[in-house]
Length: 184
Image (tube, rainbow, N blue to C red; front, side, top):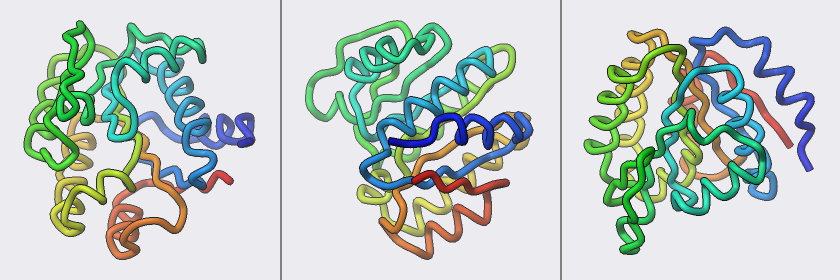
């Protein structure tokens, strides 16, 4: 069980336009993700969620169980389309899979421009996305996303599992972030 109070305190002290990498154990990914999304939706008007771990239907059900305002999120579902489970909904875009980096980038860019108010970008699993992409291609993709976020004054949070995946890419992504928070 994570220390939600400590996580919220860490996040509360970060400027709204910062990009943060949150590292946690595999056992705590779900709980950490729910706490981070809840925090982000309470602090912002709208957000883009890139989901490489859970399909849209499951995410919405979990958000509702955790009292997260689902009207404040637009979800890029990287799972359902590949499984033929992409039922249309108002606040979701089904992307072919986690290796469709160009589609993901275009969709994030479109919604950054379109959404009004304070916005955020949340990526639920850098670890999962690294499984589906060449490490250095993925690092360049993340650099591009971070640059676009910074140019638009948008903050964001990415979740990564501690000690999983490519260490060099993790180091590259961490050095592009304004802060790294470890939650165990």
